[in-house]
Length: 238
Image (cartoon, rainbow, N blue to C red):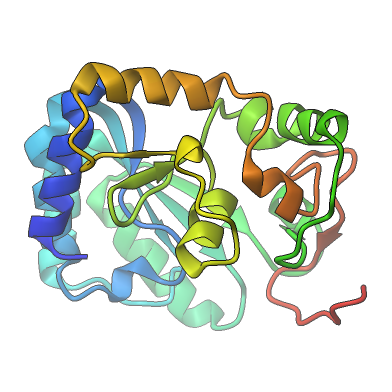
């Protein structure tokens, strides 16, 4: 993502949304590999009166550039960094963590190695295939999902189409899910801000989404989700 793309998406989003609690600038992989991450942070801060906190994610294996250190220091009161530690290169993790600590940015450290892993490990979302679930089953899965029950939505976008959850966003993007326009808000479809707000509310109050039939079910629930040690390869039948 470029700064101009980011600015375009955020401008369109805040025409329809008054405020966001926690704005996630980057998701999976290692966002701190982005060569212009400091510029993306600066761009997000053009809208700092529209969100409470900007959250960044890192695996804590990429040393911070001087520009990044300065950007983190400058905006530390509006930032939070989630650090996922995998214990693969502990010396580097320790060094990078010290860099983060020197900026004064609040850190949320998650442990993903050995025993007692954060959240019990990773959740397997299942294969990209329809499970042929009944309406009753879909409603149960959607209502019991951590995204619905605990987070009240984990809205995701990369191209201006805003989805309720990452499963819906990524599956639609890859063509693994039917492209159902009722399941996302298109920030660039020409509809009015009021119409977009109504669409956000419609999705938030939905009984279920298309993605619920293509998910392992009970996503993220503490009592039913099967967990796996992070980053360990598993067979598809496990």
